[in-house]
Length: 308
Ligand SMILES: *Cc1c(COP(=O)(O)O)cnc(C)c1O
Image (cartoon, rainbow, N blue to C red; front, side):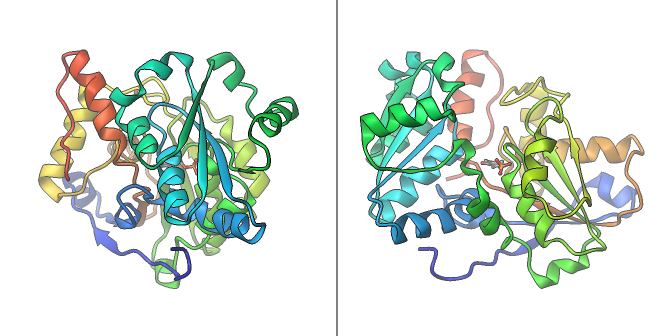
């Protein structure tokens, strides 16, 4: 794994709104890379795991919440490459019931050692104090930050775009920590604009992106529609299911579905500029659907299609 360069296909996307406005929209199927090490998480782990290997580390340690695609990808890739993996999970209450959580149960099945920490101490996960505590408890480990974003992760994400993608005017990507967007920004062409659709409310994330971005041809859309990170409703579920029925492309509810929903709303509101050729990055993350469906079921809401 990670030794071969990897290119994914661009697939044409159809939607009545795209037709109406004369837009040519494609989706880069990074979700097809691997069922668990999916999309941008493969890109973000690549140079980190190669680095951990060359530093002779045996253990990877990282952080994540109950639906974390990054935890899943780290557990799966770590196992394939022969690393021991440790996941520090947000929320002590999950300790007794993580087997009912599909994301965490999968991590455990890949032999990831799960340590549950309070929301309070999780907030301090990236402080030097926490770092000391981790070193005392776990010894020498290769640490990946929450969401996996660091300079090596950005370098991996610079490999998402290829020379053929110069065809597009604009590139759209969902944003969590912003590492993926930074990679796209850095490898975009001078005539291209990169738009990040945040999975979080607000645009604070811009500061983080600036740390890694090598130009200014980008902007961020805040997630104001559904209430913020991992917040979903029946509207979004219907959108995902209808899109799947019409195109057989499945979007994850936390990141990619909100990007496509946001894009279509922007176009309908006549807030879309001149850009006619649009490339959407499907960053994957489909493993979160089972966990989300449990939540939807408890609320008596319709569930998202699951494709196996
Ligand atoms: C993690 C993730 C993102 C966000 O990536 P960042 O580099 O943290 O911005 C987007 N989409 C999916 C599916 C993800 O799993």
